[in-house]
View 1 (spheres, helix red, strand yellow):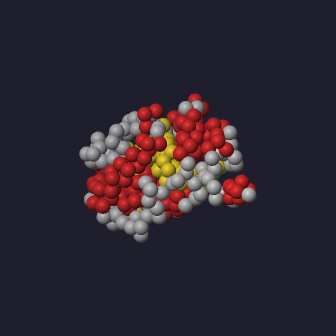
View 2 (view 1 turned 90 degrees about the vertical axis):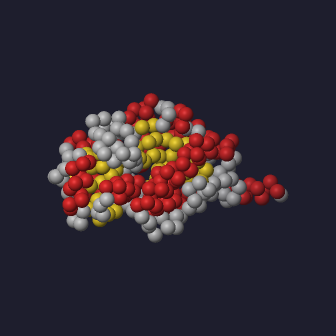
View 3 (view 1 turned 45 degrees about the vertical axis):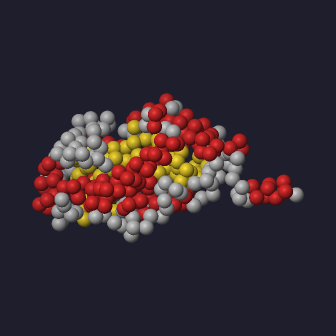
Length: 322
């Protein structure tokens, strides 16, 4: 009788799946941003190799909104059975905890960290006819024209919003923010010269920079990006110590069995080591993290440090979202 009850509970999803039987059906990778952006690119590159490593189909589902918190909250509240996992980033798991007055979740308590995947430098780009070609010229122009200027982002609270907002606060200008439902839409309006500038993941800007459709101003990581080695960082151009970078990592709901976390971790690392995957990341200007930064324990420490790192700048900038 007890055996029949347990079987019924398992079938209903009440009893978490055991690692030796997981996965037994397709998995959903929740990407908390719109299609076409850098986070979506990371997901699509990993999707096939991850399916092969797990010997089960991985479905990518884009759930955008609230700077990534809507999709992240969905995973945080999901059953801890390993069948839904999140591709989170600096916006969902670091800046949201301070930027929003009431975050939808606790980034450290409501998730089981799996593995840090990649880092993506933010780049500040401007409409091609903006009369500034470097950061010093941009700062001078912005101080004179801030009342009429507009900057775009992939959504309120996203890394693209925060990167430019922190830049504005550091420069000392108050420019109107225009949020979009994803970085691709923001980029379209920048190319069309409907907005003045955008701070976006480097991979999403490479083709437009190379074609001359937009103008690169500065890399927002401390050092130059391998993808744009000739573009000086904001730090190099006079904003000493300024840094705003993005990253991507996998998370499962809290209380997911450790054995399932380990299986997803190992499958992800196997996918990251696939030569085809590595080549596609390189072609897209995305930097995979090194072997020494791939443990679940490292990701847990990393997220805690990122929350603390961003809390100070966000508070000092006065940014608060409802």
